[in-house]
Each structure stands twice: as structure tokens, then as C-alpha cells.
Length: 128
Image 1 (cartoon, rainbow, N blue to C red):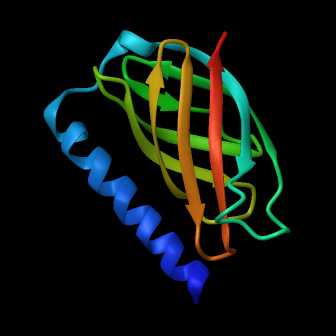
Image 2: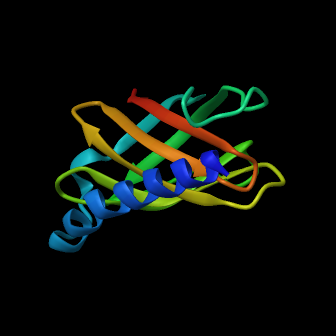
Image 3: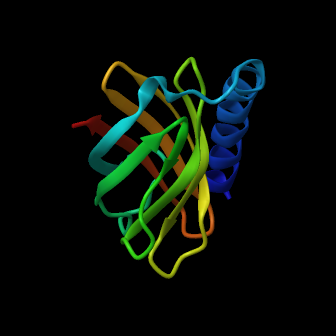
């Protein structure tokens, strides 16, 4: 129950912090490129079964972020002029979950919470 409350609070804070910024600007090609990296478990919010996942082939084109279908990790969403990222992240044979983050320079940093399995990940991708 404590994990559920903590996850709920983390999601609420993340949504509150990014929703106003997402509403202020349009999507933008400013951060176009190909990104790769990993999502690692957030220790305070994840159980022992939550593993690290490699993410490759993430493309931002004209403010739309995505991956090719058929990858182990699939991402689809938008990037604003200020670098705010919001979309969905899906793992093979699992429902997609909300992905929120920010691109600063060449690095995308974000978060994903899958309350259904009690896991949360920090996503860090570098533009190649």
C-alpha cells in the first residue's frame, strides 16, 4: 500500500510539473536526432524484479518522438520547443505507460512508472 501511495504521489508531482509547460508551446524540431541509452530502476520506487532495459533507435523528427515497431521498448510522443517530452513507453507484451521527461542539450532524462507491476524507471538517452 505504501508503494502505491508513493507511486501515486510521484505521478501527481510529475504531471503537475510538466502539464503547464506542455500547454504553453508547440512541438518543435529543435531536438531532432537519434537517441539511445537505458532505463534503470528507481531504487526508492522499484521492487527487486525491476530490471535495467537498453533503449536504442529512438528518433525525434519534427517534434515527434518514436521508435520503430517491433523493438523491445517502443516509445511514441511529442517534444516541445522547451524540450519537454510526453508520450507512452511500451515494453514487449506489457501495456504502455506514461513517459515524461526533458531534453537538455544532447540528453533526454525522463521517468516511467508502471504501478501495475510496482516498478519505476529513470530513462536516460543520449543523442548520437
